[in-house]
Length: 153
Image 1 (cartoon, rainbow, N blue to C red):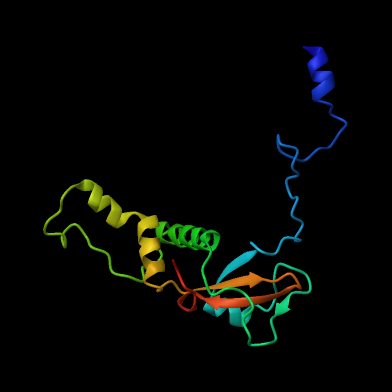
Image 2 (tube, one colour):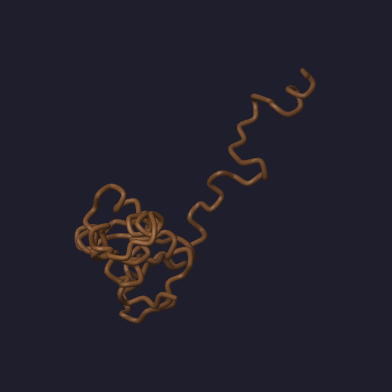
């Protein structure tokens, strides 16, 4: 067993990575295509700073990126909003309570009406979530899209 420890668990080497040989932080800010931030309307007016050095808003009013919401952006928006809902944030759409449901079929339907992920997805498709999606471009600039401007499939 000591031979195994000598070969594979050398304490002198500082390797920060996973079992596949990938570094923990292998991106280093070079891959901008999936780098997005979700911000609210009042944050965009106050916050001129960004996570990337030398980032600035796209000076032209011409949009470069696609008007379609990607599945990765959709997942992040729903997850962020579901977390807010689970922490008792106010809802932007009305939900049916058990008293409102006349033909309550079963408990599963009631559960789905109260699940934060389901509520967040309904809010997304109603375009009532007050988020602004900040998409970073390879040149260091960014574009801000409101959710009601994006096309959701």
